[in-house]
Length: 338
Image 1 (cartoon, rainbow, N blue to C red):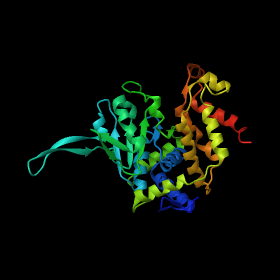
Image 2 (image 1 turned 45 degrees about the horizontal axis):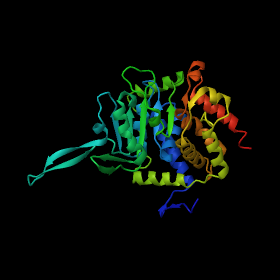
Image 3 (image 1 turned 45 degrees about the vertical axis):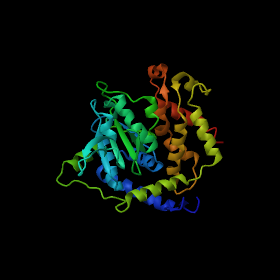
Image 4 (image 1 turned 180 degrees about the vertical axis):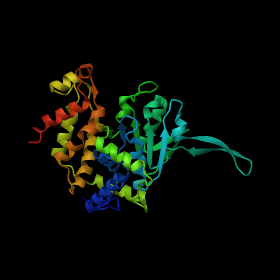
């Protein structure tokens, strides 16, 4: 670490980072039953500075997780319900003609819901590709451009998009290039029998659990400083080599692995390597370390890489998923660590 400073900003200590992260998990656990691993992955992505695509069937808590996260962080929150008739201006904002007091008319920009800290893009695959792509500049560059004028988004800016995998009619699958913009793709599984009982018990009674903001004062500033701390975590050359080799191994034209050659059409991009390193840095801090280990990379590899791998027809026929490919490469890659 560089004396816990980044461009003159006083940064929290790794211990403070761990306490803040644990407090967020505790608050989210007050209203969300189960999904502990998914919640941790979403928080890791937030502090790593990326965005998350959440995939799961209806009714298992996708929207509740995102809304609760905004409350726990103490940050501004907005929700966009993506539908087939949603237009890009409904996301980013638009210019309207207004009349001033002196009678003159002028164009004024009205901000859209994208101008927030935590944005829920609900059922993003229900909107047309044109509207889906309206989020790309915001996600990648933290700004939107309207009529030639660039408008800066608030920091932090965190997009959580939800995806319903079981409804195909009236949906527009996200292109691979847009999937690549998400740091992680986090799957949500069905709750267990005990978890369903707990959900029923906690949501049908007279008293409803509530969330207390973890960062009640200067929340955005505190969150930004925690994010800067993540960037200060050290990555050894051996880890960089491992990450590069792992990502490169997913590319059929560069891989010698038989499973990759047979079951993968397109591999992960360099953004996959960035996701691995940034996520691993957060995992290192959670372990009380200021340097990344091989285990930190392995811990987030499936959510960082699976959505960046395009399976071949042979993979779909054999029931081999991108996650299976990543797990296979992690097993192979353990030999690289020696």
